[in-house]
Length: 248
Image 1 (cartoon, rainbow, N blue to C red):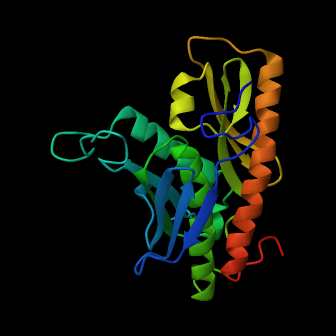
Image 2: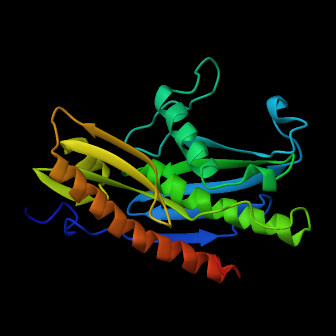
Image 3: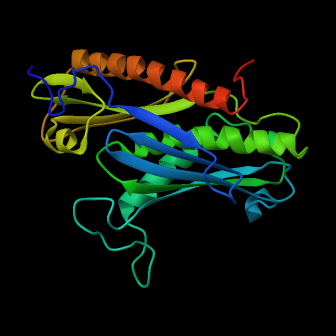
């Protein structure tokens, strides 16, 4: 396979950088730059839970996802405004983010409180949901640490590290971390969400007018695992810069 559009090798991530603490009001804030994709994430804490959890001693964790109108090449109409409801893709992604985070969180350690994660895509070039999940986990850990420092909870409710990455098949070759241009031309598109313990939280894989073999599936998962190892290291570095030694 010839070099990719941006001259990366088939098993190479796009450049990823993360900054934190830029929002004055949120309990935590994380901005992730992943290639040309840019996502702004905040975590907000509320002293209440949905009605179905009242009196259970259990907390709640949910996420909202939004793509700004000019995050893409042409302007999209703003969702949730006027008579325009949230699109199916937006609802699917925010549910994915929420359930992925809940999979690694003990909500009983967040009694009668909610953490709401807001993921806003400022610029989209593929991988917006995987970048959102990766940054959302950091925002969750940082917000939980804020609650510990305030004496609200005794220990973090976050049990495992969590991150996500895309893989696919392009021109017959499995590749890691697709940009939008690659994604739109790929024969297979897959998103892999994993824990730091190498357990799968969710795999979303689709043949785009094509099929894929068991060997290709295995190779895509191996690429995802290797790419996520780099992302996990970056997350730990960010936490260390914020005074948190994860897992220690």
